[in-house]
Amino acid sequence: MANSDRVKVRIPAKAKKGEIIEIKTQISHDMETGQRKDAAGKTIPRHIITRFTCTWNNEPVISADWHQAVSANPFSSFFALASASGKIKLSWFDENGEVFEYVHDITVE
Amino acid sequence: MDSTTILSRRSVLASGAAAAAALTLSAPRPAAAQEVDELVRSLMGDVKAKEGKVRLKIKEVAESGANEPVGVSVDSPMLANDYIKAIHVLAEGNPYPVVASWTLTPRSGRAEVNFRMRLAKTQVVRAYAVASDGQVWVGKQEVKVTIGGCGG
Image (cartoon, rainbow over the protein chains, first blue to last red):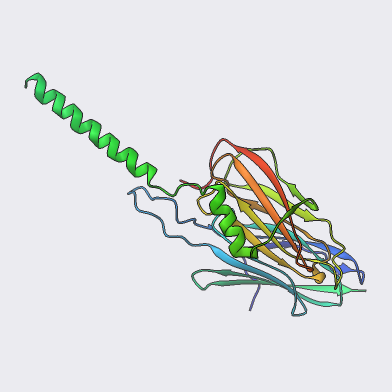
């Protein structure tokens, strides 16, 4: 799966073994709360990303369950312990079944 | 048209306004602290959270309730046998108070998450941290909000 063009990340390309690196991510998504009404007074259906995961060579680093109070175009930053060269994979799952992915190659020396 | 009809017209208009007001009130109401405690139980079980260890980084006055940066960091070595396994953020005054639940691992390296949240009104934000040994820590902060972030 190609990297989603809705995702922006800031992750270092290289790290030393044992170093703690910061991972910054943002995905373009309305995160519609289900509480807003359109011009006709009809409730706009809820449509949010409910789950986010980050793995490093398929090992879980961090994950999250999100609810409607997570802002639109969700930004998140967190940390990861550099273990081995390979792939950092970020995945966002929205409640309509869409999945957005981003895979970042990292070299650990 | 005599005065009685005018009056009755007015009363009709007034009752219409009252109905509109009732509709506004029936919109989701912010949950009370008790309901929040109930949600905390559903997330973490019947735990006694201790104050401390959790540092909640959030402005005291929010510029807009729609996109407020929040950071939670917890004092932990994040080792295989001693780490923070979960961070829960709840906003007491939101229509649905649970904002986000993070699951961490020793591979997270540092017990810290940063993201942005919606705040419906001035309220207290709570951050809970669950340690690998089952202990629960909590940090709280009041945030003043002038423009709420949940409606249109």
